Image 1 (tube, rainbow over the protein chains, first blue to last red):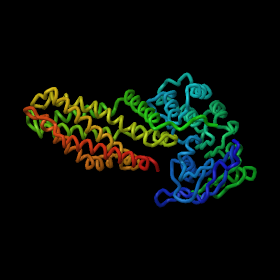
Image 2 (image 1 turned 90 degrees about the horizontal axis):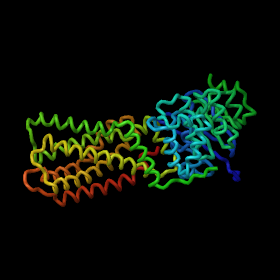
Image 3 (image 1 turned 45 degrees about the vertical axis):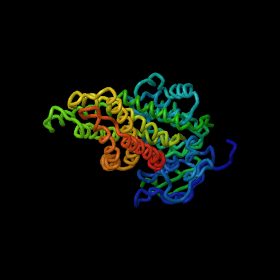
Image 4 (image 1 turned 180 degrees about the vertical axis):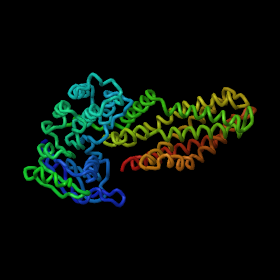
Length: 231
Length: 232
C-alpha cells in the first residue's frame, strides 16, 4: 500500500430512514492500515454507517470516500476492495460452504478460487464440513463461513459488524489472521466490547442516536468513556 | 492486495443462474407450486364450466389465465431466497454488473415458465381441450409459449426487483404485474385461439409481431431500469 491517501473519509455524512436520522453529520478520517472501532448502544447507527461505507446504502447528505473513490459516484470502483461482514452470513442455506464461497468468488472475479477457498476453510476448521449444506450449520460455523466470504477476494478494507459474535475462544483465534490487525487491512469494526474493541482500535467513534459524541485516538479513550455511551 | 478483477456481465450472470438452478434442484418449491397450481386450475375449470371439453376462445382464455396466474407464483418466489438469506446484499457487495442479476433472474424465470408451459399445455390437451391440434399447431403453440414466457419473465423480473425493496412485496407483485401483462395476454390469447379451434387454424402474424415488440420493449426497459431498482 504505497498510497498515503486516507482509506476512509466521511464529511457531514447523513443517512435518513424516512423522518429519522440514523446518521447525523458524521465527520471522520481513517488512515490506511488503521482500525476504527465504532461503539454505541443498539440503534445508535453503527450498522447504518457500515452499510453506507459498504455501498449498500446511499448517503442522504454529505460525502464519503473510500480508498480515494467517492461513494456516491464511484461506488462500483471500491466494491472489489471492500470485505463486509454483517449480521447475516449472506450465504444460501441450500448451498454447501464450498458452493457458497465459489459463488461469491465468481461474483468478485477471483481467478482460480479453489486454492483460496480450501485455505480459508482449513484456516477456519470448516474443511471437513465444507460439502454440507449450510442450513445445518451452527451460528458459530456460519459466522466463520461469513468471515471466509468477507475476505475471499483479499479486500483492502474490512467493514466488520460485531465480527466475533457467536465465536468460541478457539474460533476467535482461528479467524484472527483473517480479520485481526495482523492481516494488515484497514478495518472499521462495530463492537459492543469496550475492552477488546479499545485494544485493537487506532481510532474510536462513539455514536448515540446517529450522532458522533466521541471521536478520539484510542490512547485518549478509557473504557469508562465507552461505558458512558451505553448509559 | 486483491488479485480479483470485476467479472463480466456474462460471467456473473452464469454464476447467479447456476446458483438459482442449484437452489431449485435442491429444494424444489417454485416449479412444483406452479405445476400444481396449473393442474388444480384445470380441474376447477372442468367443473366450474360444466363442460368436458373446451375449444377456441374459451380454451385459449382458460389456458393463458392459468399460465399467467401460475407465473405470478414464480415471480413472487424469484427473490425470496435472496431476501431471506441476504443474497441480494451478497450480490450488491460484489463488483459485478447489476444487469447480470436481471439476466440470470429473467433466464431462471423463463426456464421455469417454459417447463410449466409445456407441462400445462399437455395436461390441458388431456383434461379439457376438445380439438386435437395437429403437429404444426403444436409447433405454433410452442412458439407462442416461448414468446409469451419471455415477456412474462422480463416483466416479472422487473416487478420482482421493485417489490423486493418494499414491505408489501406480495401485493406489489400482483398489482403491478397483471396490468403490465394485459397487452401480452391479449396478443397471446388471440394468437392461440385459432390453434385451439376445430379446423386447421394458423397463427396470425400481427399477434406474433405484437408479442415480439412487447418482449423487445420490456427487455430494453428492464435493462435500463434494473440497476436503479435493486440499488438503494
